[in-house]
Length: 85
Image (tube, rainbow, N blue to C red; front, side, top):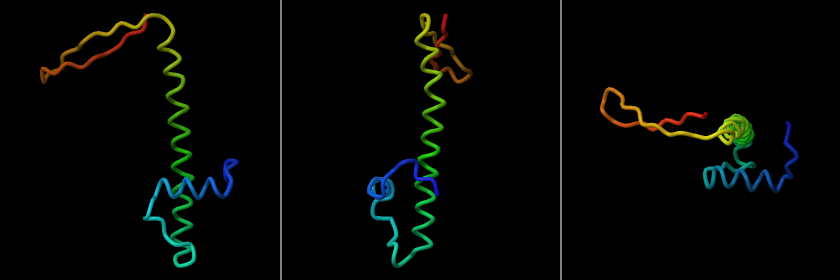
C-alpha cells in the first residue's frame, strides 16, 4: 500500500481527524479497520485530484482583467458570471 511518504503517526492522526470516534478498534475489528484505511487514502487521493484541477483555473483568472456581469435566468434570480478579457 502506498503511504505517500506519511509516517504512521501522521496516518493515525489524519484518520482520527477524519473519522473521529467512529474509527473501529484495530484489535477488535481488523477487517473494518482495513476498510477505513482504504477510505482514508482514497479521500486523500480525491483531495489531491481536486486541488490539481483547481490550480490551473486560478492561474487563468489572474491573467488579464476580469469583468463581472449579472445574468438573469428564467426564475428571475440573478447569477453572477465572470469573463476574462
